[in-house]
Figure 1 (cartoon, rainbow, N blue to C red):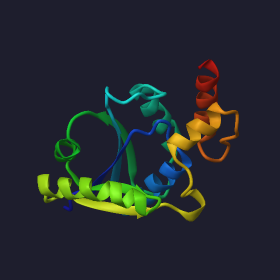
Figure 2: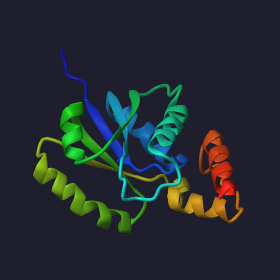
Figure 3: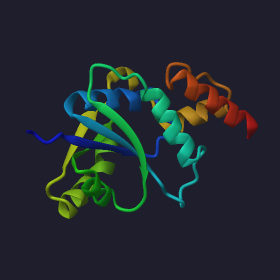
Length: 166
């Protein structure tokens, strides 16, 4: 009996975007199970709480078909420690540009040092979604611009309600 191949897809997801979802769906075709892991970082100012982000990701990933299982969880501490507990064989990261690679490369090297049995897997963002980031989506929404098509409709509604509230 073969062991299932589990991958983690970590991030802050504040909020989850269509770019994230594209990467999650693609990773789910490569692995038996993908655990979308929301980083708990009290030092970082987030628009949405960890629980809100987990809920939005679960809603956005509901009904995913034709791919491996997608789960959602939150974690604090070292990602590789969480990866060991989850039985993960890989950590998936999305890259939009060479700047993303320069940011990710030292973290991937450190993860390889701390957990040599866990591979880092980079997926390139789809050309039509490479411009989307949570930071830019929040900025556009806060300035009254449209974010339709950049985030799922339910996330868009929550985002607009939050930025209007101030």
